[in-house]
Length: 152
Image (tube, rainbow, N blue to C red; front, side, top):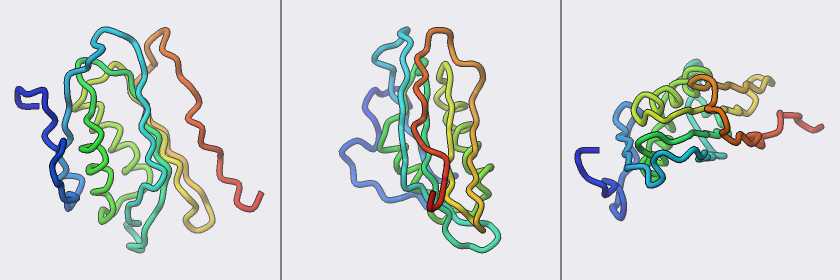
């Protein structure tokens, strides 16, 4: 965060990064430092590319975390997630990679990600990762994404 409390992207015109590696996530001090609470981000229209066919893959991502010293700035997260539009990756690698990068950089008390991928080849793939056991006393609501049922 380079010594400032002002998010880098706030109020600025920001182009979509060319790749996840080029995306810069911005973190700000946690305004409720020391309190146990959970933050949820949902990205119901996440897109990346199939590494085999090059065709788009779609997912509903749900990211939950209990902040530590910092919180992720939402615009930088949006740009980071958008940078996957031209990135080829298997569902598992993409989902776990997003969770691990956020966990490694932000250093929350706890983090989990659910990647609910729409069917490819007739098979939906759901991928889940968490940093470890949730802190005692943290309220963990269900991620609220139903299993894929097709036509029911």
